Length: 85
Figure 1 (tube, rainbow, N blue to C red):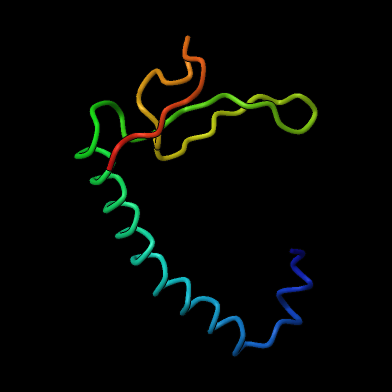
Figure 2 (figure 1 turned 60 degrees about the vertical axis):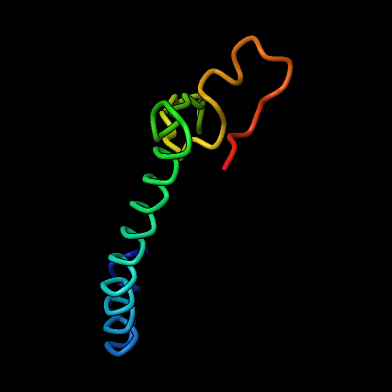
């Protein structure tokens, strides 16, 4: 978004956006902590899965996701296996 777009944005909408972000961020953090605890308790290994991907113009970046499969499920396995809940 360009600076000119912010200048033309109504003040009420901007205030509502900031308020909703301020209220939503703690809830999102809480949900993230609960998911991390569930992954940690239900299976051994790291909470996050790290994968290198290729983006725009071949630029490599690391993508972090919650781990939903067993550690090493994609290495040497014929098909991935989901963790048990």
